[in-house]
Image (cartoon, rainbow, N blue to C red; front, side, top):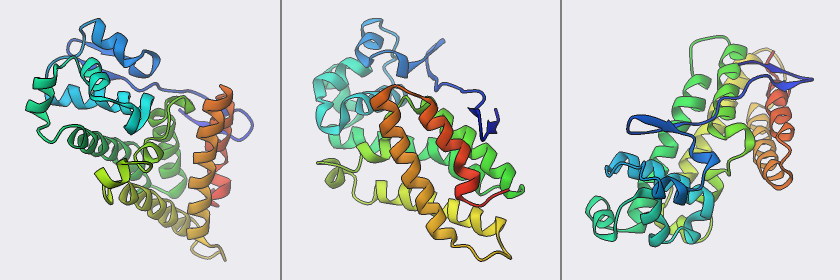
Length: 223
């Protein structure tokens, strides 16, 4: 997958979650449909993955235990078996999964040993995959509003600072002899990405997110 300043992202990889023998594109179906089809296995790992899509769709406050039960295919007793602390523990497990995926797809590549442009290209591919071409809501935002901030103290802040620092380091590596402000560039990159996600979902125009990804080399002064 590559990026082009005029054409935007040239190829998009949708996020797939493996439920048993077959992979399902969770972001293209409601979590209720997955549950009704009986495709979600009763294990903690797959329950967390399904719960994550439920939180993405309905937000923390909107994802009731009934919806989480439908999404995971687990009854109330089974939910409490895997998550004794209830909804807060489910949200914590989902946030940990977000952190793991984001580290694998974005932060890890940004911190790699390759030249800055190669690292950024991999991170752009990861961002496109993580956000499903801009179709999916920002989980960092979802897990930072309402009661979630109390349920997940410091978790979302840690993810946000980690990606800012990774972008900052990348920009600094690419501009060791130039008079730039890597921190400001990193913050601007995050602000533009977040805004693009909101507008993409509001308008249904995925080129908004793709074009923002294509501008990241310019924003971070990486060439």
